[in-house]
Image (cartoon, rainbow, N blue to C red):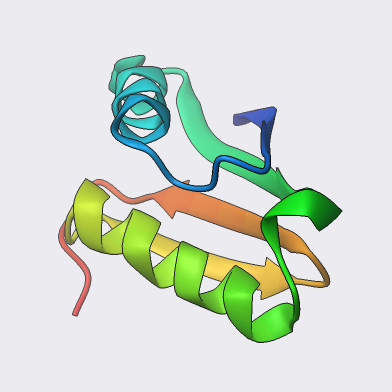
Length: 83
């Protein structure tokens, strides 16, 4: 059973502290999925949410993948690098 953490992305958007905190959470072996809720103050449209998701996964590396559902980003960690 994988555990999922839920965090929020607010009006400050993606900062260095946000990305570092995300990376530290994924360093725990029991964490495989993180749900990021993009608050209304951080977005104008769904395209903004997709841009945030791409930026997050680019920072985290090739072992990560994402799925955007509504205004939420689901980031998943894999054991091997993804193409």
